[in-house]
Amino acid sequence: IHDCMRGRINVEGTNVVLSAVIDYKEKLLKANRFIIVACGTSWHAALIGKHLIESFCRIPVEVEYASEFRYRDPVISEDDVVIAISQSGETADTLAAVELAKSKGAFIYGICNAIGSSIPRATHTGSYIHVGPEIGVASTKAFTGQVTVLTMLALTLAKEKNSISQEEFLNVVHELNQIPEKMKKILENNDKIAQLSKIFTYAHNFIYLGRGYSYPVALEGALKLKEISYIHAEGYPAAEMKHGPIALIDAEMPVVVVATQNGMYEKLISNIQEIKARKGKVIAIVTEGDEVVKNIADYCIELPETIECLDPLVATVPLQLLAYHIAVCKGMDVDQPRNLAKSVTV
Ligand code: F1P
Image (cartoon, rainbow, N blue to C red; front, top):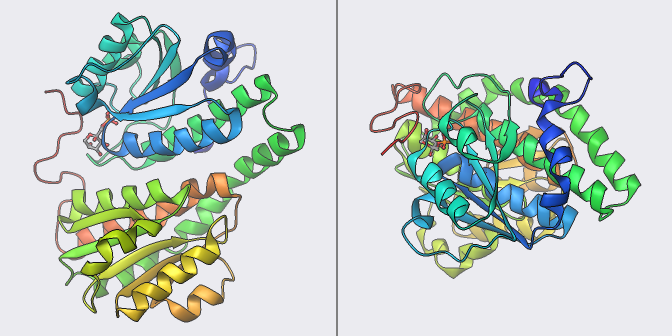
């Protein structure tokens, strides 16, 4: 994450991650709307990007599965900016979405990891996330890199547009700079998460819940578990639970709840109470020092405090570790899960 925040510093000392935002700021700021296209983990990063860009820049954002986008006739115009997110830069659906949007005159901004790959070459400009190669098939550090770049992009545009105060801008930058140290603290939970994982190897299903910025984190936690441990897992916005998924909850059901002390904390407490009333097993991701959720949840993983918009950066890591340790306990090959390819090129 440090490398990603620094970007590659060029001779003039400019952060290369952001130089494209600065160079094309007029084009980006006069967009009617942004459309973000991506697949899998990158699509979850896109949902966080939508929240960041809409909150900071007040520009409407649509998030599309690239795998659906190219099979209909989406409304795209020259006034749209399309952001394509891909770790590998080779995902066929995302590349096809880029080509389609480009043919309709949209301006295309890529956020990719693999330098010189097909998607960045097909875009007008963009940012590399600079997190280095993903060793395993499942995207992990790329997610953190994508969210970091989206945060920096939203902040930079908001500053140009004056849609956030100088005070707020400086506060987010300050907090962002603390994230690498906080990540180290989160990794100190590794042994605890490994122990916790042993309890849940029995499970055939998992539910993940979050609200606001943490809803895509819940989706990503569930995807990681599916990808590497082959356990069926679904992520939901916590408030959607009562519209159906609550029927699934019984004493056998582990429910992972991202319940940091931000935004909708109070509402998450009542969601946890609803699960406990149905005897579900709650694994809560909480802010350090939280005593309220600790008293209701079955298990808690603590996170250092940060501001709401940066929660996804810290809250995703324990969920990745949970999926990793459960998969290891079950004897799975976490680097090369069955049926998955590093880049889906067909
Ligand atoms: C998209 C993706 C990954 C996932 C798996 C299959 O890849 O869905 O998120 O972990 O590797 O592909 P990309 O477009 O971000 O390279």
